[in-house]
Image 1 (cartoon, rainbow, N blue to C red):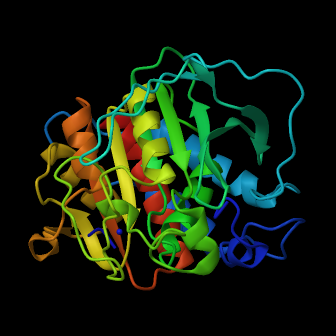
Image 2: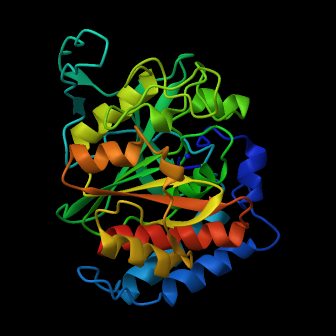
Length: 338
């Protein structure tokens, strides 16, 4: 919940989405819903958000269907020999940051992110390790780039709270879709792999990572569901995502949560993006103020730290595979056109 792979998610969860090894008896129902969502999109009428090209929508739908029928699943995609070209150097420059109550961390040298070229269905991507959790689990981003010159960079975070599992499933679906031309796309299935494994909201320190960012951070009580940590940016997962944001400086960011159901307009920085996401996914526009307890959140940090805009997207408590498919296609389309 705002206030909130499984790229490592079990094969059981992926099978629930129709992504499995071998040829299924029939195309999963979510592929037909995805096809309807992208071939017959509602026009994006918000200022600055152009309507998607019909050819792009058709390509997206066909790619998703082909990925389902492919003998490769999202989880078991093999490595590809050779190097995948990128539009940006694979390095991270993390500047030292002063933390309230703590001495400033020393600046680190330029450190390369480990990059592994892989295939998702028939779609090339790079598996980039951006950091590690408290328990040493890899924090993974999947970097994919559309054809042609990069016009914008987009970031999607599937999960902050380990007991919210819809976002990672949607990210897995997005990995099976074609990346629109000109889009530099970064997909992070989970920012909290330790909580994901334990099915717990917080990380291994029981810290709510979506309260641990340095912008508007406030101290809280240990043992509460929204414990913000001993100090701002205290958790390795938080610092890894801060470094990623400062490195790629995304123009548009979508942060998935549940179960409040809606596209968050609270403190929005890009009204057109909110409206376009709502139209493309069929979700309502709502305002999630957390009853005044939203402090130190990821979207607040990103909206303050970079020129781009970040939006919180809340799923319902339960979401069908067909609805997840519509969201996957709709979010990707909006990121490319808004």
